[in-house]
Length: 143
Image (cartoon, rainbow, N blue to C red; front, side, top):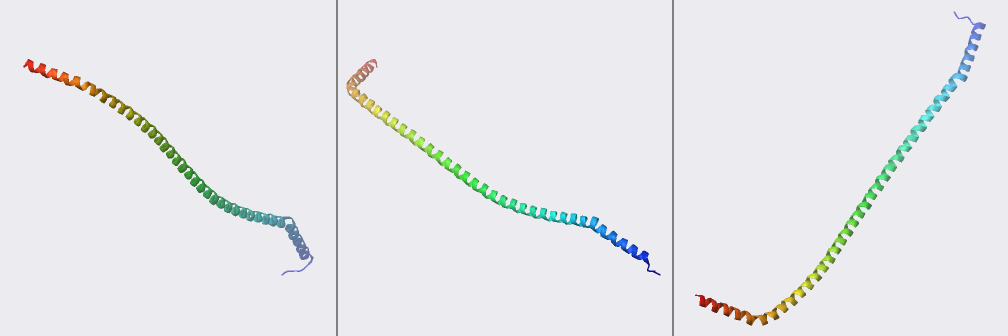
């Protein structure tokens, strides 16, 4: 049977002192450390979530900016291509105009030469007829 005496009260007092000392010097610091660790983990998770949201937002922003830059670059390339084509057509038109002018000048020169040759033809025609006549008469005698 259990006897209640002074030893029981001393053991109970020592046990309560042990619990108090253990609580104050061991359990509370461990619990504070565990609470601080849990709070740090929660803060880190919240920070990671915010950083993830920021990364997604920046990814969307940069995707839009990249698409915009590509459109601008495509527009600039198209504009440069059109300008090059216009310069080419302008150069071709300039060369065509120069060539047409040269051809017109040469035609005029040729018309002048033809007119000069026709004038000499009228002078040479009687001589040519006379030479043909002489050739025919000479040919008739050899038969």
